[in-house]
Each structure stands twice: as C-alpha cells, then as structure tokens.
Image (cartoon, rainbow, N blue to C red; front, side, top):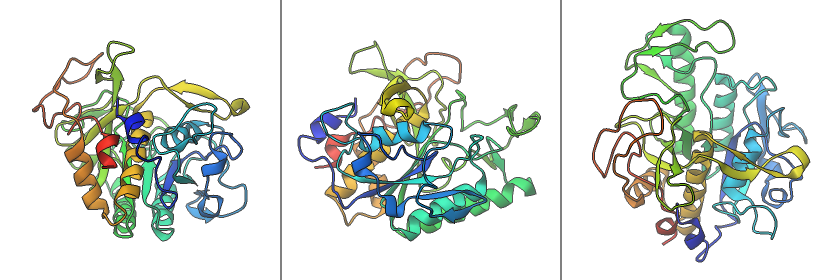
Length: 333
C-alpha cells in the first residue's frame, strides 16, 4: 500500500540513520530486531523523566506495543518473520511507558530531549500523553505540561530530528473538538468541554507529522479506506498509512502477531522518513515533512467504516487522509 517493496528494490535504508522508538521498549533478543537495536543510545525515561541508561532499563515493560512498532519500522531482512519498511536502519529503544501503561509528560520530555541529544534522525510516537487525551491551554494544570512537551519537541527538531505520531483511535474529529469524556484516564474521568486551545499531544504539536490509519478495502486489495477507529480532522491529519491488522514482531516467544491502531500506522511513516533520510541525508526535518506530504499519493474522501465525522476537503488534502498515502518509493528517489 505504501510501495515499500518497490522502494526496497532500490535501498533497504542507510545504516547511518537512527530511529528513536518512543514507546514501551523493544524486545532485546527478538531475531527480527536484535541486529538493528542501538543499545548505546537506548534509554528508559519512565523513572520520573530521568534518563536511566542501565543495561536493561530500556527492555520492554509489561506491554509488547513498542516491539510491534519497532518491527514495522525496521525488522531485519533475515529470512524469518517480517521485513520492516526500512530494514537496514538502526533503532534506539526510548522507553516512555511505565509498567502500568501510562506515558506522563515528564517521560515524553525526557524522550524528545534524549532523541535530540543523541542526534537521532526520526522518532516514532504511537501514543498520547496521559492522563489527558487533550491538554487545554486555559487550564494551568494542563498548559504547563503541554508547553514543556512542546518545547522538548521544538528543541529536538532543531537538533535535526523529525517526528511522526499517531493521530489517535477515538474516531474523533480533531478539527472540531467538543467534549472529552475519558480524561483523566488514571483516575475518575470527568466530562470536559473542549475548545481549540485543547490538543492531543504530541501529535498536534507544530512540526509533528500526524498520521491517520487506513485499511485495505476490499480486504486483500491495494485500495483502502479510513479505519473505523482512526481520528481525523481537516488541516490536522498530515498523511495516512496502513494501521489495521498489521503483522509485526511481539515479545512472547520472540514471535509475531497482529495489532490495529493509528499506533501501527505511524511507524510506517517513521520507516518512510528513515528511508528518505538515508537517500537525502542533508534534508532538514522541515524539508522532509514537506517532501513527505508532496510525495504522498492523493486519496479522495471515502466512506468510513464506522462512526465519526464524514470526510471533508479535497482529493489533495482532506480530513481522513491529509495529503494522502505515504509513498516509500518516491522517498528514496
């Protein structure tokens, strides 16, 4: 769907490219991942936002989410399992998820700053920051962490890092926010009225590529439509990528399994950005985002597979797919 197979006839990516997987850690001995993990630049940020560089600190939490994401980005071409979008690039495990499954602002700040300090080329961010699905600027308890994460993202971008992030799985129209029923998610949620100063972070921060999820439709074809769970939003979604029933690496038994979500779409984009950086090593993050959107294959509005706001916009830029389906082949030309 993203022409990764055709791109890999040209290149599997550069060994000089490093992708930071901001997630729940990466299985250190998975046969599809082990050769591509940069252990020296891996870190655990879930200790109150302090970088833990211990030998095993970045190992997976109770979740295999990060391991699955990593396989989509750069599972090695080794004759077993799956092949990632950019199977020759390196990945650093930047653990920003604690054992209870939460990603608090200080963890994300640590992760973005670490990526900048280590001069990573790309980060993937398949999460939203807890405990609020949306951080509102008119609420002091939310504005401060939102601003902290924004500054960390902006600083790491200045160090040359480009960021891809999942749009979210609430079938929500991010361009027309109304209410939030699920926050805070680590205590008792309260009904909140939202305004345009409320954002899903990090995906809605400036400079971050916001990725919606598409699914094959009909199943087994090369055509697709928006996944039913995917968030959307005119002027918010930048590009789309496959996110439904994605087969990738898992921790249990060093095996492989299927997951769905915009969390699975974003690493496809991170992989394309990694291929692009290898082919064009002098491009800045801004140039890469511009080219990613320009190269994306236009996807006209189509019928969603469930509830949620209908598609609005043009074939070239709409609320479901943004600029369109990312194109790995054009990224390496």
